[in-house]
Length: 251
Image 1 (cartoon, rainbow, N blue to C red):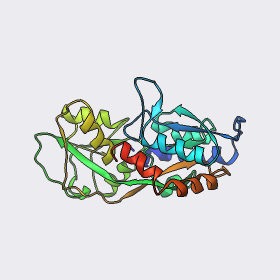
Image 2 (image 1 turned 120 degrees about the vertical axis):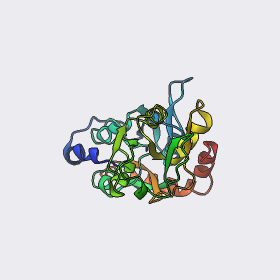
Image 3 (image 1 turned 90 degrees about the vertical axis):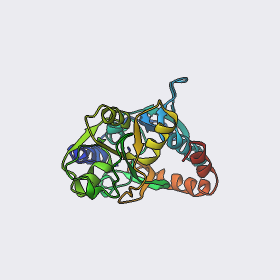
Image 4 (image 1 turned 30 degrees about the vertical axis):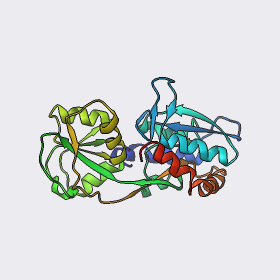
């Protein structure tokens, strides 16, 4: 999800202005409100049994924030609304499959990385095509998640028929139904959903190599003075605790 998309350009200038001068509601500075999307399994999702946010990024953010000496709250936030919600002060931290990009770094502050991963291509189960890089897609119908970095990667590689979706689940559905021929998105999320979700007539193209290995970080406002403490906590947890969280979620 996963990432930065061209449509983000519609709100990036607004987000920058809000971050620079918006009056945010006062909140206990000892509490960090963690915002995360509900559709990014295994990084972030809503547990159907508890109706609460969970996932590897939520667990990592909670561990880091508490190690840094702060209390935590969580807020369910659609992926496309995460940065605007951070800018407006509705949340203090983003913990989701949001990759570091130069465009985003203009308006938000990224922590030190807590995970690295790349994109994966999916096709229908009976589709035998082999694609090794994005430059081979051309005019083939391909779907990617709105607001994700993978959309820009597709356009940069010359893909000419890109459809955008709210979630990877929507991409897999339209792929199965023949509305698109290829899906492109977060490799860990796709592998997790294909492993533990309902049986789908979808497979990952194992021969594909993504153009970049992306950094997954916690995201805060540039003026948030608590970020150095967050980075110090990441450094303390990087050797054992964060890897253990990632292994717990099959990463």
